Length: 70
Image (cartoon, rainbow, N blue to C red; front, top):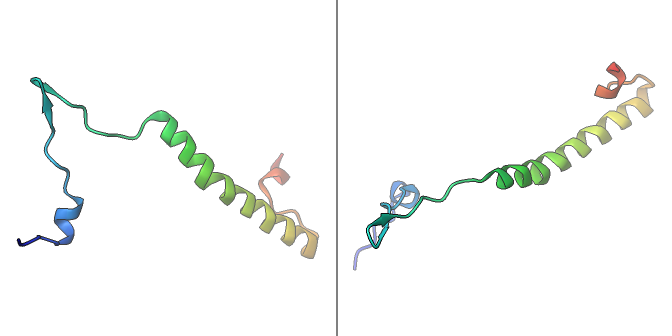
């Protein structure tokens, strides 16, 4: 038994499957997956940026955040 463990074969998509003559749709990211991705990745990044802006404002006294533009 020889297993091909090259990096390319691990990332290659398997051929589409057929069940009773119908091709099964390949998995993809849905709209809700994009929303959750933005919340999970974007939320903490936004909070971190706000915290850094708050620290800079507390130290220098100059507002550097996006909210200063409005």
